[in-house]
Amino acid sequence: MSQSGEMSAHPALGAAATGRPDLPGGFTLWLRQVLALARLDLRKSLFGRRALLVYAFAALPVFVVMVLGVVKRPGGDPLFGTIGDAHNAYAMIFQTLVLRGVVFFGCVGIFTNLFRGEVLDRSLHYLLLSPLRREVLVLGKYVAGWTITATLFVSTTVISFVLLYLPFGVSRTMEDLTGGPGGAQLFAYVSVVLLACLGYGSVFLILGLVFRNPILPAFIVLGWEALHFL
Image (tube, rainbow, N blue to C red):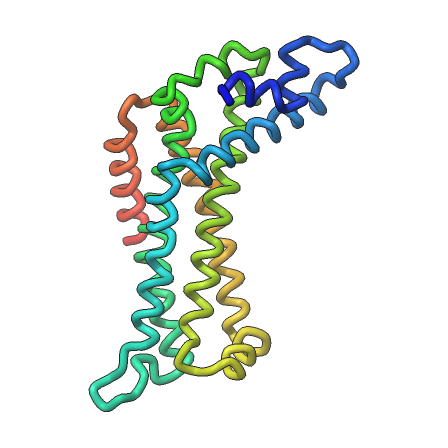
């Protein structure tokens, strides 16, 4: 199915293109167009060729934590002697690998390609020729990008955090997550990831619109982030 065929299949975009008078206008129509655009981009981004690299990148923290969970000390004891040690280790993993690595570069890859992907596929003109407000077009793609990154990286955070408890068994895991500090820490990590996807997403979406090659500006942002962490 062509891009124009895909767009006409969505009532918000297709009806707007035909100018049907029975459709509600204003905010209601814009909302339907945003959701229709988001669905289009979700399908292309989640099942396209570029998605495989994003999935592999998102799985990296899970793999690292699994390896740390099975590694033993020279005497045969687990690498993490206590749950507190595991929490401290994950704090370092989250700051260096998850937040500054996976989330940052994942947002670079996804948000900068929301419009660049259309340009490379020679399909952007279908959207530009449609009777869509430009801010609706940008917002629809931003919603799609944030949905993808939030889903992937929150899942990565939750799975890797829970796998950290592998050496301690199910009962101690549930005890720490429900009655100990583990649940509050996990909630804080998830909240940070959601906010990071919002912030990084807006920055890299703009970079993808302004720069033909946004890689260098993205590394400038990374350098600024490194100074901030210091």
